Image (cartoon, rainbow, N blue to C red; front, top):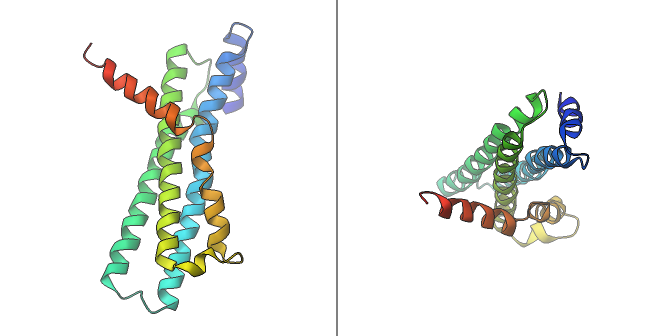
Length: 172
């Protein structure tokens, strides 16, 4: 369905394929966080493995910390799904308003997912300690990966300005 919507958006455009590009960008943003959230999930599995290995799995503080991170992961995954599902199911040529709404929802999902992934990975690194920074440790690679999510378009500064300006326009 997605390729059909992109083709129809391109046909409906003014010849510049701006509509198709906007749809593709929204789809990319809504999906890219899934890669980084997958890395965050793997980091949480590493933290659980470390806790069991170090006999920390029975400590209440460990339950609370890993639970907090797991809730953060599930919240970010939910935000991504809320955005990606309508995009994936869309059929037809999207209107300008639909593209705007898809774009905003995708930006929120991308920012939420990528920032959550980076925060989760950083927290897991702190939990595991310096061994997580060793070049051969799986967390070293996960950490390098997770730090790049927020750099994909739309970057955080653009998204924050857009949503800040939108908030300031409310009630005008």
